[in-house]
Length: 89
Image (cartoon, rainbow, N blue to C red; front, side, top):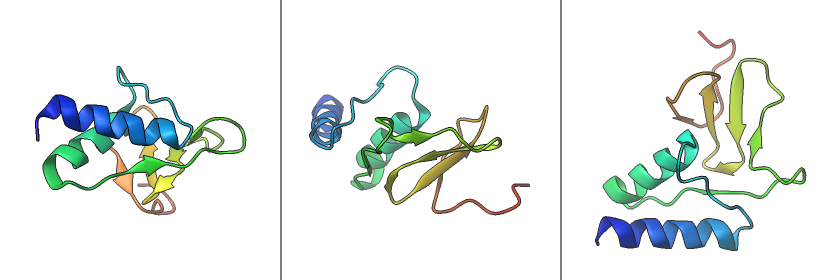
């Protein structure tokens, strides 16, 4: 499938979940798009009650409300799937 079609379908799936993807500089979006292209795996965030699919309340990590759950160390574009190791090191 052409890359632009994959991007369009993933964008549509996110919007149907109530999340507008930031296709410019959101590392979680970039990761989900890469996974869709490489492995055909779809990662869709879950719309949170505060209107944002990311949780910035932790001082060290950013969580994405997604299935599978994703997280990244702050100031990092490396995305990890599943719950983070505690403590982060």
